[in-house]
Amino acid sequence: MAESPAPLRKHVRHPDGKDRCPWPGEDPLYVAYHDRDWGVPERDSRALFEKLILDGFQAGLSWITILRKRESFRAAFDQFDPEKIVRYTPQKVEALMQDAGIVRNRAKIESTVKSAGVYLDIEAKEGFSNYLWSFFDGAPIQNKLRHMGEMQAQTPLSEKISKDLKKRGFNFCGPTIVYAFCQATGMVNDHLVGCHRHAECAALALPKTRKR
Image (cartoon, rainbow, N blue to C red):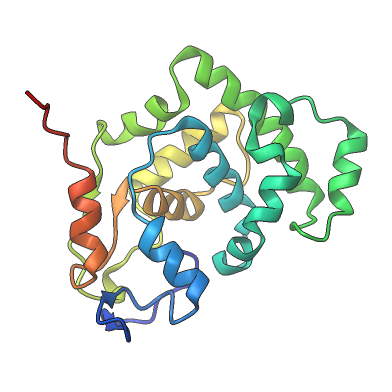
């Protein structure tokens, strides 16, 4: 979640009768993202790579800006296939710099190419998803936030993950970006307790019962 929350902002009731966190407002795209994506535990390595890269592109911008360009980003970066991205040539980087559908930041584009190689190394050795979830012992942190003033911008754990990502070769992954990434990918459930998605995301984190 990108924007700095105002203190004491609690959940709000929408015209559909559902209570939601206040940060998406009433923007249909943002509300859909809040309801379908944000806070859902993500275990797919490629999807986690995509989100980490997009959060890096968000640095200095609002998440809604990136969200509105997400499909263009996916098209430009070959659906965030690391095996394709790692082979990008300087000519491809130049082509991306001319693509108005994405954020045309050379440092971030070149970092994405580098990060694809780092991702492939981690994925081959331990699994990128396993690597990230190991910081949480495989289970999401379930916070009980009553209002936005209780939401943190970063934590000691996000600082630890940030340092490790940087040591391995990732860029644009400071502790604030990493915490936003952890919130979005359900490693931390930061939906307000009054939001209908808090309980739903918490239920998704529970181990599935084996059918007899």
